[in-house]
Length: 137
Image (cartoon, rainbow, N blue to C red; front, side, top):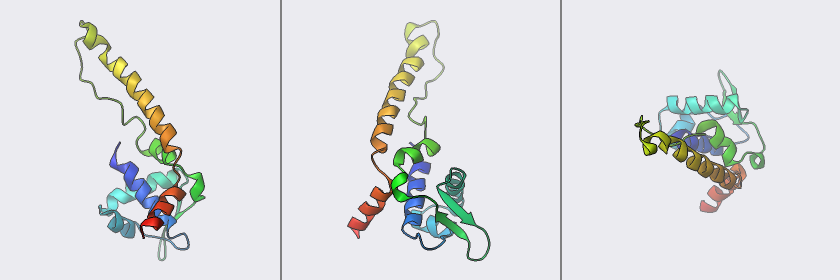
């Protein structure tokens, strides 16, 4: 799993807690503790997939574009990290029974793991994340 996944959840949650106004990438990056360029990359991806909308210029920024209960963590994972669990295998000796088959065997196992992860992540929506944050306040 890569940091884009957690930055996307962070950004969406930040925007979800401010549904009545636009938020800047600078404000979100300050909240996440990362460089604004990293957040802009993630926000661009979220906009491309319809999770957020943006407005340029004075008073512009980003705003959440969906119902919180419709966005689950699997949706976010798929656009930021799908395939990230696949093992990185070096070029193996194809003349060896282990070397010739290891990558295919491990990929099969880890694809199954990613499917299970997806089923688990589908149970959590952005509304759940917002609710959990409210419990901490």
